[in-house]
Amino acid sequence: MKNLDMLTDEKLAMLYVKGDNRAFDMLLSRNQSKLFSYILFMVHDRDVADDIFQETFVKVVVKLQQGKYSPTGKFGAWLMRIAHNVMMDWYRDQRTDRIVEAPKDNDLSNMGSGDLLDSNIESDFVNMQVLSDVKKLMNSLPPTQREVVFMRFYQEMSFKEIADTTGVSINTSLGRMRYAILNLRRMVREHQIQLQLA
Image (cartoon, rainbow, N blue to C red; front, side):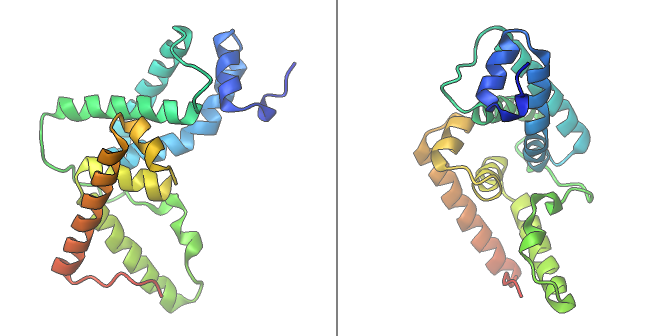
């Protein structure tokens, strides 16, 4: 019996293809938090995120069983690509060009940025306000720009990985980031927001 904790996601995926269901359970437990955070960040609705998350893993199971995964690529990137496609299908089904408004309970506190903040009360207050402003600004970006910002800064993906995950060229990914930054700067100017951590 192999110790599954020691195996890479790619090896776990291949074990699952060979019939080891414990390998899939390990894949799910390793990837669910990061994947769900990504989906929730994009759709801003916990129920929709749950549905997309489940549909993503159903597609993962089907594709693994059909032999459509090659262990030469990173499993995490492949998984994100499937989730991206499921979300794009969901957006198309919405048949609207408007930006989805975030519900009040949707925030980025689960992204770990709080770890970077100083501990004194005044600094905490200033920093919480800055992070709150950043969240509002990011939620105002179009979905494709919000997605590239999330992948680059919160998941620390390279532009090549972002391009592979979203199915666009590296230049398109870079362009989306450029427009996201321009839009964020414009919004900061228009709303006269000070974005400086204490």
